[in-house]
Length: 367
Figure 1 (cartoon, rainbow, N blue to C red):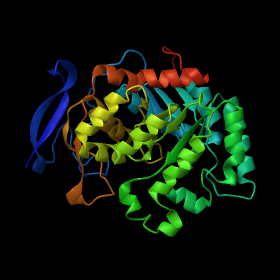
Figure 2 (tube, one colour; figure 1 turned 90 degrees about the vertical axis):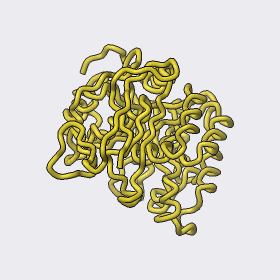
Figure 3 (spheres, one colour; figure 1 turned 135 degrees about the vertical axis):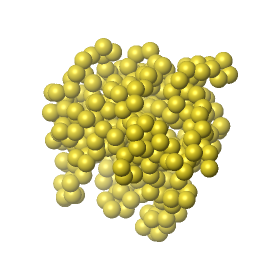
Figure 4 (spheres, helix red, strand yellow; figure 1 turned 90 degrees about the horizontal axis):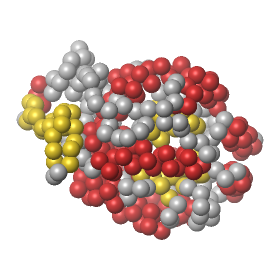
């Protein structure tokens, strides 16, 4: 079986310069591009050499990954090594408060924080603790509060975005002039699988009614960011409707496996969506660090994002997608976005958002 593979080399497509060319590789040899590990791992099914040199994105200025989870200061060295190899310079992260001060001290102007609650259990004074954390993150320069409203989270925590329980946190964010970021929705595969018990988890339609009811209360001049392409990359028409109805809404393109899988199924429509909404989409990976996540694990996510947005890659993903069987592993289809769209995705939109909130980066800052 022959797969169509692309590598970063200059060529011209429809009058635009992109760093890719096509080559064919026999899948039965497992695409031995670079060095093949002795044992296939979930983040390198294809035996890629993730340390192979790669040109920076064709962007003027720094590349900003708006959606990350650097969970511990001890993870930072390998994080920055992998990111630098893939040309990514600045990071907005949902780091536990207990780790944030050390990261801010050691990594200066390369990192910014989104205020998040403690996820270590839920006590009777949980909301009060969250309010204290909002204040402390604010003192660290954060101007964005994240509300994780995935179906599983709402079911386990017993709250919703529109519940009175969370009203004090929303009011605090609004009073401080902070932007709001939400995770609403999850993969369609999950709604038809582990979220099938509607009485417990609700429906996607109800979740988006909840989102819009609170979004309508949000100050019109304050940004609201919907994570993971607004939480429904399977239905771009739904997300387009949200963008059309709410001028202050932005979305990010994070969640590597989910977003890459679903956009690849509708490559032409997805490319048109990114071009149409070029001013409203932020680059993000949703990378999560861990003690067992080294260079290659982190690099695999950066690799997929670079292929998806910058190239016309058509081929298998190097990352095992646990939501589908081995026989149904996704075929990636890169969007080969125009250079002017990449400029906004990787740089301009994040800079405008963060500068407007008073938490911007310096272009030439050093760690």
